[in-house]
Image (tube, rainbow, N blue to C red; front, top):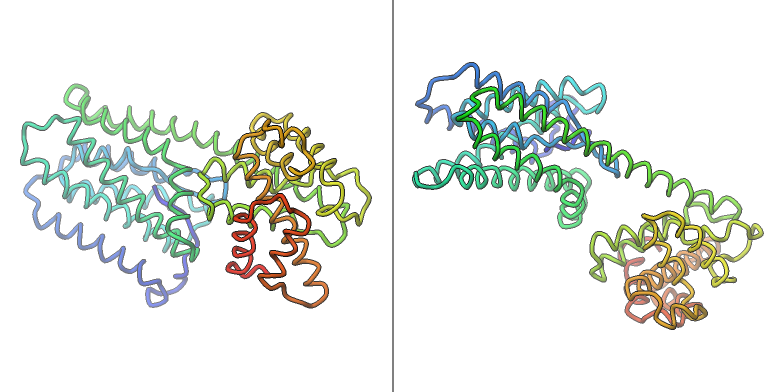
Length: 412
């Protein structure tokens, strides 16, 4: 898999990031070492088949909901590992990926330099997989399925790890958060291609070279189906973002409030140890936490006035959409003190915690906007007081983490 990004190298290698140059150096070393140890002659038909599979995988891309374009090529790498010696396999993968990604540049709008770096990053991962495969070959009794599975797993681990490092360095973000986001988005398609790769290694003795185009077609169908799923998910998120903006149109001085609350709610949720699915529901709930206030008069203090009424209306709106059911419960739990159902235990602890987080972040953003208008900057103590004044039911841990997150992320 490769992530398309707009690199910093626009004119010369001297302007490139050190890690990009390191990737190229590692790839050149891997191919050179493989050629130095080569003792097998080239099989043109196998080389052409693996090259063609690499072109197809390089040309097909998946656009993730957050906008990144990634390419999953575990199937082409599996064919190289199973059927070609190291020097031939790495060369076929490199040339095929370069051809495929260059062909698709008019869609991805990625720079030529980023294409070269990404293709060579795959070569480094494949070289590591070949090294492990060579170490396993000393045990001739090992089943083909096991050795192929281990080699492909090494390729996936190294390639995905290098992708996470590349994405984190490019965006100057946390490795842990970037890795969690990437893995959550692509693990299903990677698993599917890895399984096809193992099947390719097992079936090759029977089908011969024809197994590569057959598996490539299956892999392309798998990618296309997953791409359709991602497009639907992206459409959901874009629709939610549009609804969040609509909920702010009738309120003066509130532009960006929903997105700010969502960003902070997710940050607080991560600090409190919430998992990926819970964070996704929390993000949706925070974006739409004031959707029930659309019938209110312009200029009303939404964060402080009539919470029970508009939060419950918002929950009823979201409950009509199946995939927003968890978010609907969180929206309704923004007003726990006056919500008899929540007090009676009708909601699970996740919804109650989510509601407390969204409410705390909403109050904090409201206080920040008021102080910004007055030309002041909120202190940690003032931020805690602003949350506690209007949300006495919010757990102290949520209050503290929310205030701390606002300060450490330099939002206040």
